[in-house]
Length: 180
Ligand SMILES: [Zn+2]
Ligand SMILES: [Zn+2]
Image 1 (cartoon, helix red, strand yellow):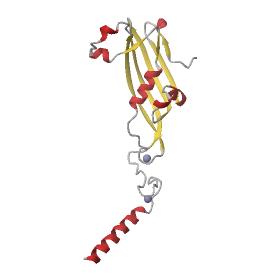
Image 2 (cartoon, helix red, strand yellow):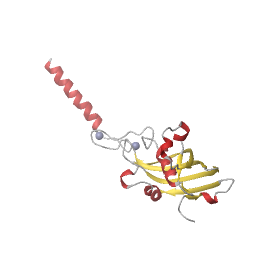
Image 3 (cartoon, rainbow, N blue to C red):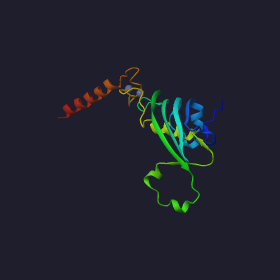
Image 4 (cartoon, protein in one colour):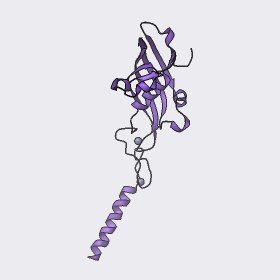
């Protein structure tokens, strides 16, 4: 079976086309140009979707379940988190008379366009993975992060910085007391 996610609309069955597939890191990376790569990498994406049509309008509804990998925002350790959710796209054929498109209705703004007899699902799935990824990625909700003084990962052990800071403060306090 071909690795392509292109759907041939000329042979789309009346009852619709059900597609179930899994995609990995290399496929996701290839979806973006070198300077548009997302900060995270894809571990695996499982997609289950249904492609139907009504006249020239194509409807794509599906469900995404994926795992992405990125450095934790606080401790910088590589971490893998699950993401996912439902998605829906409505596609209409690209119009050639651009002049008549100046006034777009709200409905039109939410629809995408296709050209010719093929629809490529790949850009839509990649877009969904990016949209469903959280802005901030943490290895655990209560990640302790790095010590701001020595850079130690506080999840894997403690450092001696805290007591040093307290000692510094005491020293200052002592001087203060002596002065007065
Ligand atoms: Zn962390
Ligand atoms: Zn420290």
